Each structure stands twice: as structure tokens, then as C-alpha cells.
Image (cartoon, rainbow, N blue to C red; front, top):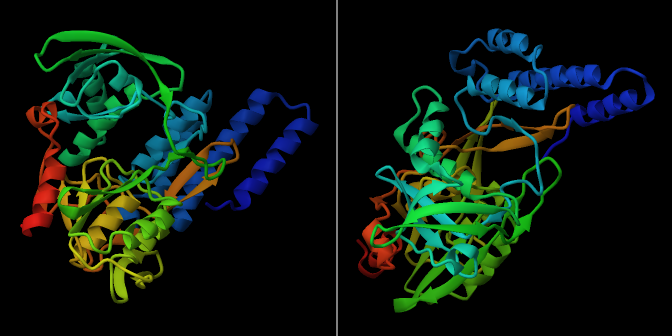
Length: 421
């Protein structure tokens, strides 16, 4: 993460505020304007495309500046700033308030996917309130805190950007439900759901803190780092991890060196939102046997080819990567570039198409600004932003299979390892 002159400016503003008798409201308004200008200037100077895709960036500044002058609080500032950035039509451009103990930190231990317009439970975590209440994979969530899933999905659709791609829309709907389910640890959430007989049932669950909480610095939201490595039936290696942050790279290295004799390896990164590209490259280094041109970053003034060197004992057998619509950023680059060089087979569903790299900076008013620093491409020149990773073998979750304890995507990966097709 980087801090430029903005950090210095922010400190000066706070010092002036404490030493002067100027009204707090006026200073807050000034800081909002200063932050808005910092956002616009950063994009002007740093965006990888100096033409801004044909947009008039100066005209966009003026349009939203007039709105910003009338913003009354931080909520208004965030809304207007993000609307301005939304004109770019790209991911990794956002302004937010970093909250280390915010509403993303609590879970009831279940995940859902929208299948045919219904919120189907796809994952139940043992030891969490959802499992203890008897919820199961395949159940259908009908309402959250007395708000119907139908209304939640309709509200999400109303916020869509123009011309949103279908797979991105699906991802946004999944996120809308996920965000309703999560919350501050210790708070409760009520659910109405259909069980295996489609009988309507209700329960209230107390959110529990998500495991593996990691705070990088005050400018970033919390990440949740989990890692699992094991052997499953037929001597197949199974490795899953929740984000591309340390110590995932070190643990992956250890896991691979203990699995050199397996029949094949399944890397389950479904739901992985990304993280550090360097962690992904460290993982790749255990899956290749020769120096490999892995990816390309296109900056405004240059292109950078990323070559990965093999690291120590590496695995040469078949590898399957499982993905879904919630994969984003570094997890997409990882899967797409390994697919591009022919090292893995990708199974699951098309990923979100929101790929960095990006920086985070603290603005004068204390909010965090995330912005792209380059365009990410595969070695064969495919732009990942707005496209995502297209699986070699498309497999969707299935409610009936879930009700019978079957993971269709994982089962298809096992089949590929065993048969090569």
C-alpha cells in the first residue's frame, strides 16, 4: 500500500483544525473537496489509459464537482465520488471507509448462490450457528431479517451500471445476499428458509467472528486468511485457500512438498476475492518446472512481463483449479494465466472480471481510495478486466446434488484427475 503527499496533507489539515477556531463543519466540507480533487488528480496522472477510453475526464470532474459542493456528510461524499469513478466502467476504483471491525467480520457460517432466481445454500461450515441450527446445503433462503430475497435481488438490480455483463450481474446478486447475511460479530440475523421438503421454517442466528482475520494497515478493510491441504480419495491432493495473502504462500510450498506423489491436485479457490499478486506468483513457482512468462501488466508508459522461476521441489502432475462467480482480482489472474500457459484445467463458472493491480491511499478526509495502476493481461494478450476467467469445463451448483451432499464442481474435478477428461 502506498501513501503519497496525501498523508502529509491530511496531517496538516488536522493540525490546522486543532490550532484554529474555524468551525468543524467548514473544515469537514473543505476536506471533502480536497479529497475529491485528490481522487480526480490521481486518476488523471495514474490511469493506465491516457485517453480514458474516450471519456472527457475534465468534463466528468466538473459534473460531479458541482454535486460535491452540496454534499452534507461523508455518506454523500462517498456516493458522489464513487459515481464519478463509476464513469470509468472499471473495477478497483472505489472510495470507502476502512472498518477493521466492520459489518464484514461476522458470519453465521453459510454461503449461498443465486440459482434460477433462488438463494440456495451451497456451503455450511461446521461449528458455526447455521450448522448448529440444522441448516443444510440445498436449503433455500426465502427472507433475511424479514426482507424477502426477491426484494433484495430487485434492489441490487436497480443499482446496476449500464450494460453490465450477465455473469457480473450474477456475481452482484450473490454478493447482495452475502452482505445481508454478514454483520458485526455478536449481532443476530433471522432467516426464513425452505428445507429439503420445501417446508417453510424460521430461525434466528447469532453471528460469529470470521476466522483468519488479517489487518494489513489502516487504509484497507480486513481480510480473512484460511488454508487447508489434505489428501482425498484415490490419492488426490486437495488444497483450498480463502485469499492470496501470506502465510498462504509459505503453507502452499509446504503442502506441495508433501504431495509430490499424488495422482493430481485440485486447487479450490472458489469465492477467493484476490489479494497480493506476488503470493499468486509464489504459488505458481511450485507448479512449474522451467522459467515461465506468466503474465503481463500494461502501464501508461510501458508493458511489464512477469517471469516466474520454479522454486525448489515442484509438482509436475495434473492440476485442476476450481472457480466461481465470486473470484476476483489476483485469484482471476492466477487462474487465467495458469490456464493460458496450459498448466491447469479450470472447472466451475465464469469469474467476476475485476482484475487489478491497484493501490490504496488515505485521503485528506480519512477515507480510503483504491485505484488501478495497470491493466492485467495473460501471456497470450487476453485482457482480464471485464472478461473474467472462462472455465475449460463449465459446471454449476445443483440443488438436488447439494441436498444429497454432493459438490458437482468438486466431483467433476476428481473425474478429470482420474480420467484426463
